[in-house]
Every structure is written in C-alpha cells, then in structure tokens.
Image: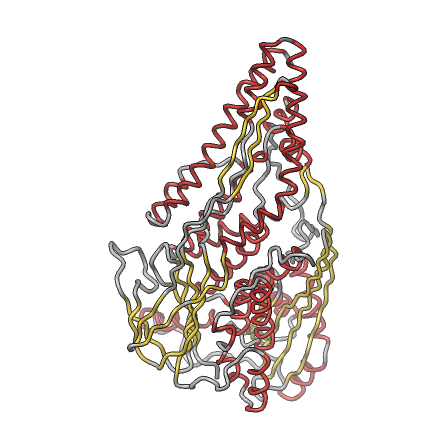
Length: 430
Length: 191
C-alpha cells in the first residue's frame, strides 16, 4: 500500500469511528426520550438511522420492540427473528473483531447482546405470538428461552437467568393445559427471585389458583396447591382470571467514561474509554386497575435495570483485558511513528485518542421493570385506563371496556410507554 | 491497524446456486424440507402398510376416506406445519389406496362457493349442498423435541407422532412414530 493511501486511511479512520460513536449516542438519546415521546415517533426517528452491519442486531431489537409495543406484532416478530438470527450467528468468537477490539476499540465488534437481552428477546417474541393468538409459536419461543438460559447457566452466578422468562414460560404452559410443566416453571421463577434476594410477589406465593381447579380432582388439587405456592381455596368457577404483563419505564442507556492522560515516560497519550451504567432515575410505578372499589396492582418480577448492570459486571473482566491489550497496541503504533519523526508521533497520538471509544450499545428501549398482576374478576364489563387492542393510536389515549366471561383467562399486555392494552383470551376448557 | 481496516471494508457478494429440490441440505441443523418430506413419506407408507385399510375395505367394500386434522408443533423450532401436512396429503393421495377429503378450512371455502353457485350458476352446472363425502378417519399428530446443549454442541431429538382415529367410534386404528436425532456442532471461531 502506498504511503498516501496509508495516511489517508489513518486520517479517515478516526472520522469514520467518530461518526459511529455519534450514531450510538443518537440511539441512546432516542431511548432516553422514549418515555416523553411516543413509540411510533421514536420508531420513525430510529428508522432514519442506517446502522452499519455490526450494529444491525441492536437496531432490529429496538425496532422490533417498538413495533411490538405499538401493536404491530407481525412486524415486531419479523425484526426480532432477524435479530435472533444475527445474535446466534455472532456467538462464535470472531478473529477479526477481536483484533479490531484489541487495536482500535470495542465498537467494531458485531453487537451480540448481553446474556439477559438474549433471553428477553425470546420473552418478547413469546408475548408477540401470544397476542397474535398463536399459542404453539409462543411455546416454541419459551422453549428456546429455556435452551438459552441452560447454555448461560453457571454455578457461581445466575447470569442470564430470568424469573420473568420462567413465569411467561409457565403461563404459556398453563394456557396450553400443560399444568405439570407450568408448575415447574413457576417454581423456577420463585427460586430465582429468592436467589436474588427479591421479595416474592403475591402471584408466586399463592397466585396460581386456576391451576388447582383445572386438575379436576379434589385430592390432586390439594396436593398440587401445596406444591406450587397455590392458595388454600381454588378460585370461583364463575370468575374470570386476569393476568397482566406490565412493562414500566425505559431502561437506562450505557454511557462511556473516557480518560486521556499524557504519560511522559511513554511519550504518549494513554486513552481509556469504558462503558458503564449511570445511576437509574427510574421511579417504580405499578399498573393499577380500580374495579368495583377495589384496587388491583401489578408487582415487579424482573428488575431489568439490575439485570443489565449484572450483565455488564460479568463482561467487565473481558472488557478490561481488551482495554489493556489496546493500550499496548496503541503504544506500539505511537512508538513506531515516533521512530520516523516527532510530527508523525503527535499525529499518531491524536489518532489513538480519537479512536478510543466505549461500547455503549445495548437493547436500550427495554422497560426498567417487568411487572405481573394476577387476579380473578366476576364475569362482567370493566373499565380499563387505556385503549384495548386499538387498531391505531388514538389522538389521546382513552378509557376502554373489558368484558370477561366465567372461566375465561385473559392475558393483558400493557407496555407503559405506549399507554395501550393488548389482549389474549382463552375460553374455559371443556 | 491498517491491515485491520482493510479487513473491515472487505465485503462478500451474494452467490446463488440452484440445487435439486430433493437434495439434502443441512445448514443450521434445524427441521428442514428434507425432514418434512422424508418423515411424511415414511410415516404414511407405514400407515398404509398396516391392516386398518384392508380391515375397513373388507367391512365396507370401499377405500377409507381420511381427513388430516391438527398436527401440532410442540418443538423448539418454528416449523412450517403446512408443508409437513401437504407432504402427508400428497403421500396419502398418491398411494391410491384411500379417499381423501378436504380439511375444515378448505371445506369452508368450498361451501361458500357452493352457496354462490346456488345463486349464480346454471341448473345444469350447479353443485348441490349435502352431497359431501364424509371422512371415516382423522389423522392427528404432533412434533416434539428434546434439545440437549453443552457449549458449542447440541443434540436435537425430534419425535413425530401421528394417530389415525376412527370418526365413527374414536378408535385409534394406527399409531405411527418417527424419530430423528441430529448432532449440531457450532463453530467456535469465525472470521
């Protein structure tokens, strides 16, 4: 390669990398404004960004999520399935990406998602299929989530183990009449929450009432309730069971901390850029239904803010090791420039400083918490605070009515950012 | 760094090669067209070789009429059940040993057409309602999987269960089972 080409490439690379960093910050600010904006407007803004191939998975995760929370479940599934294919293809270690991370910066890796994000992807897909009334496809996704969680499981830490994923798995089994499997999944959800020192929500202590009655035999039902955190009494067959999946808030985006220090002994500027999560300003807000003078509230089953920080902690050893390797390689680059002339060394120092950029990519449009509410209601018609299964977004979110029949199971998906309610209904089993 | 940059800007073009539809191509290790076709053909061949067809023909003097009911996907993969069901229907019809009637979805469309004919077609070409051929047996089934994964290796075990049920008395006249086991080894390193 001629010296002109080398110089041109060295000059252009920081410019190109800065453009990428700006794009990452753009995605982060869209996520940060999602709570004040609308998912539809955010989706339009996001679609104006043309991400490079290595950021494609992050882009599809976000577009898939935004489509899902606005009720475009087919579109959401398309994007999320594409994201899944990319994430799966990136699980093998890449020689070129590691080389790039060790010499330039971490953002040159293909975005392959954190452990929890990989599980949450299946969880969102299963909700999407459920809202499309495709229970078998939802079952496929919860099984895939179980395989991913098994692959991620370690003896030391519950990395990539999600109580909400187990709960949704249990729910899908329960709706499909597979009560034994449902019980095991609910138990796993409860065990994980206990392991993380989180207080068990009421629906995991005594919430699976309908399972007991579904068994049909009194003796078995008693035994079953005892084993699976079930209430002493089966629910009234004249009531409908409401299961609310509520997504509250928007998870905090990663930030980068950059430090540049002149080290005289090395005759070089040493630059470090590391990702971190700033303190969360999330304020917990349950979804509340006021029905016939009684309040029904959702309870937190998953603190995604905490999970993603846990994931980053788990990745930190590898990030630090790569940062150290990068300092060494950049030092060699400056040193070799310095051997040619001091002007070139100054230029090399600037290039190493400008190319140092923290990887702040994440699935940053996820909710801060996933909450579940589970309760029985007598057959009848009830007011909901947001539109139910709206065809399109109304100008101002309005109330709507939910009519329920005896023995019916109704799953409501309530994404807080879209202020809409989507439903899956299951008639009583004969 | 410069060498690395040249790696980064390098791209690959798309190449398309046409291959025979019957050729086995395993790319990801997931359930594919070959699995669907082979399982359907083998299971239907097994079903037709069992005594229920001849028993029915002996009792009634005609070939049994079969309808394909629900075949549920309980596997770890999104399987296009329509291609699997179509493969089974093709194998059943082409055997020439059974009659085959339209599924409930297809019947709805045909009945709507018959109603339309009743209003719009000439008397000579009109097809009357109430002349449908009732099925004697329904074929139902499910696909289950067990996935055992460890690191980069995965064993995928598929079990396809089909049942032929008599619509007259709910008797199960044939139970078919086909198992497939695949070892999928994912690459540890990529370029």
